Image (cartoon, rainbow, N blue to C red; front, side, top):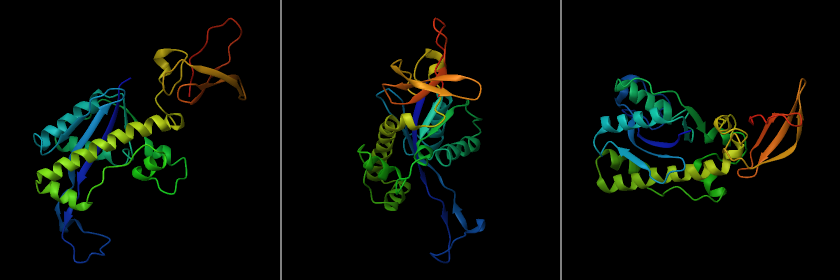
Length: 243
């Protein structure tokens, strides 16, 4: 299974307002739409990382590269990407008349964090509390404005920032793997193995009794995830583990 780690950065919309306290901006005050500035992506388990930006070969080329990568992915890991990254890119694809990519599963680590109760679910807070590192420091909106104005120094900072987010995303995925609900089942192709990480190092840990049948419970020694399979009679073939 090909799993892609992805993070995008976008330019803000620009609008004319009469007050800094304005809660609603009518469409006629919109001066410029938001758009994708850049994105970083890497395949899970591989060393190389791709980075594409509007200032590197043009906006259209960047969008095509994103479309190509998503089309090759079986699953995509992101942080709040189901509400932000993927919808933003889908609008870019529509605007570029590229058509939909092939279907892929989404592994949104932000949604995994919603099953827990940290005082903040911001990526930087979560990774620091878990001892996984920290996001690249920057000057806030000043960096985004400089990138939009074509500042080459700002472009370099933004690239470091974007790449670091993907590095943190990969570390966080490894940490949260046994906690991720509805993770794509990696045991389908590999037989009796962990459905989360694919490891065959499973330890039998009791049984789960439903209304109609009994299931053997397993815990993965590699990632710690729990799974279950239909309990087999002695001498019968083992069934594939399911999440």
